[in-house]
Length: 274
Image (spheres, rainbow, N blue to C red):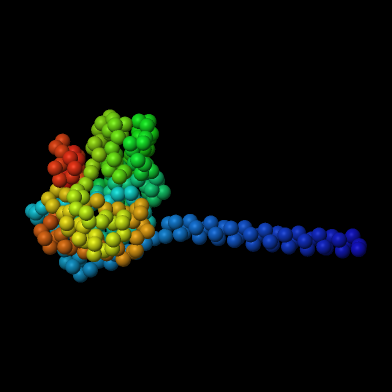
């Protein structure tokens, strides 16, 4: 074999190896991109109805028993946009107890929650079990989330809800030092299943209506386990809002209060107009 033949063979081998390497790189990149896309896939969106479009500009101005819809664990691209669509169409204010890690990953959703007039509140960084945390770990969970939410919205949160509703002395000490609410709880006195248990839209409408009394803070979610529930379950929200209004209820947001709430497990918080 001549030198030129060997050179041509080497060149052909190099071209083959480069082509093979390019194919592998493209395949891996496509796989990574597909995974990232799957992780941030957007969920369903809500289309306003004729009833929504006929609402007065300020439907909450009238008197009546007042409840707060509260959403934990978000934001998520799968659920938060739909929930915000519904609240905007129904002209309902709400309170969002946001996780720090989810907020850092989706700042655009945090901004939308804030810009559309809802309350942005703190739900810790990674949803830990606070009784197992050291005082230093509790401080990081609360402070780090406050810093991210403040950076995104320009407003420092004043409300905190413990993950799983489980307080700790270390967490309480941090909240007292920061002048934040000492753990906002909720009303859940029935045995009705919550949204994270995936009971379906009909059962969730029943849950919301059963728990709704004046000053009730209703526990709902826009991330976490609820992301895995069938999408049709989200239909509970517009239906529950319409049913509560038909019963004379109005909607408010959670605000700090010096008086413990007899309705919401003694939380030093109240439901106020927005």
